[in-house]
Structures are given as structure tokens and as C-alpha cells.
Length: 258
Ligand SMILES: Nc1ncnc2c1ncn2[C@@H]1O[C@H](COP(=O)(O)OP(=O)(O)O)[C@@H](O)[C@H]1O
Ligand SMILES: Cc1ncsc1CCOP(=O)(O)O
Ligand SMILES: [Mg+2]
Image 1: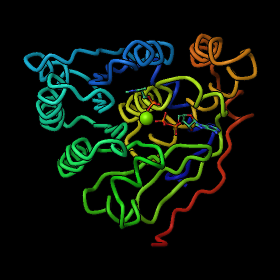
Image 2 (image 1 turned 90 degrees about the vertical axis):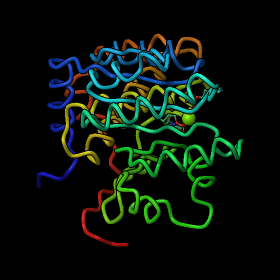
Image 3 (image 1 turned 180 degrees about the vertical axis):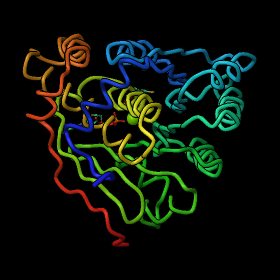
Image 4 (image 1 turned 45 degrees about the vertical axis):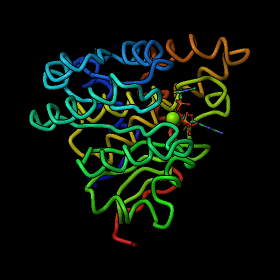
């Protein structure tokens, strides 16, 4: 069925991504910038990280996807984000929103909710951030109104939209012991959104590829320090055989069930 995630489909999309070398513009946090750029390059994409309000429209509209990450939401980023968002929308580019730490700041949570009204393609967050954004509703129901799809990460990852969800089981606990793995994973999802037209499948591909590389890296690393270079190498070297051997789809529901 064309709407299913399979290891062959992921391998094909990864090949397409490496051939297309999509440009991903990232307005991301100061902690994550360098690691995110390196993750995108290892994957086969081309990162740009400018946050200057006077330049971001040009970068966003000439990129193949946009990542907006709220991790260090300073004045410059607060000004740049709406400008980049509008430019990407006008150019019909996919947009990923990562509302880092909305569970720690009411101001940031309000800012993120306003951004969701602008209909980004994908909301990527951990469980605590999802719970803060949607305190009284099931996230899939709330997001159905904004048209966004969702990727909620953790030990198990849930990707999808109302009535169509995938539960994914790749990854390794060591990924949570290095900063900005969630942020970089969001950038990988943006890169797959640039080459795969079904956004649910694209997000699931991004999660799976990042987490399979994380598993390979964790097997080779002595701890968080050596995980980082091993993860970049694993992304660079990842092939269809390894994807097929490791892909862990816990559940794939395609009918409406909500
Ligand atoms: N216990 C775990 N087991 C396997 N993978 C994990 C685990 N915790 C996090 N991950 C993976 O690490 C990455 C970062 O996820 P997470 O920690 O939820 O995000 P954030 O860094 O935004 O808080 C994701 O790709 C996720 O799937
Ligand atoms: C530690 C920290 N502080 C502000 S942003 C950031 C990085 C968060 O990265 P992630 O959400 O991927 O854990
Ligand atoms: Mg995060």
C-alpha cells in the first residue's frame, strides 16, 4: 500500500535525499546550531543557520524546507521566526516547528501556540512539551484543527495525524544524554519532508533514520562524548541493508480510529 512505511521506502527516500541535497534553513537554538548543521551534512542535506531578520526571508524561500526551533528564543529569533515562516509558506515549503521547553515558560508556550495557528507542516516535540501545549486535549485532535501533523519523541516515538499513526521503536537511551538530539532529529525530519510528499511518511522516515543511526552509534560509543562523532559517521554510512535489519515499527494504523 502506497501510504505505508517500509524499509525499502526509507532506503529509496534516503537515496533520493542524497542525490537531491536539499537545502534546509534552520532557525534553531544556540546550543543546537553546530550539531544540527553537522547532522544535516552527514545525512546529505545542505544546512543554513542564519537568524538575522533582514536575511531570513531570502534563506527560507530559497530553501527546500524550514526548521523553526524555539530553544533559545531571544529577541532576534522572535523577530526572525514569523518572517521566515511567511516566506516559506509563500514558497510552499514544508515547515517543522520544535517548541523546545514550552513546558518551562508560559511566554514561550503562547508564542508556540500562535505559530501553530499559522499551520506549520509538522510539530515535533517531546512528551512534556506536547503536554504543555495541549493540557486538556489529545494532541492529535487539537492538531487536526491546525492541519499540522505530529511527531512526539521519547523511548517510543509516535508520528502521524488523527486517524493515521505510527509507533516507532528505534533509538537508544544514550541519545537523551547528549544535548540537541531532539533538535537535530527535527532537522532530519525537515530534510525528508523536502523529498517525500506524504508528510506523515516523511516524518516517520526522519525519526527512523535518525534513531537507527543512533542505535548503531551507541553500539560503538563508550558514552555521550564518543556518541556524537559515531552518530555523524552512522548517518553518513547508513544503507538499505542496515535500515532493513533494524527498522522497528511497533504499530502502523492507517484507518480512522479517533
Ligand atoms: N530512552 C530512549 N530510547 C530510545 N530512543 C530515545 C530515548 N530517549 C530519546 N530517544 C530518541 O532520542 C531523540 C531525542 O528525543 P527526546 O529526548 O524525546 O527529545 P528532546 O531532546 O527534544 O527532549 C529522539 O530521536 C528519540 O526517539
Ligand atoms: C539545553 C538547551 N537549552 C536551550 S535549547 C537546549 C537544547 C535542547 O535540545 P533538545 O531539545 O534536543 O534536548
Ligand atoms: Mg527538544
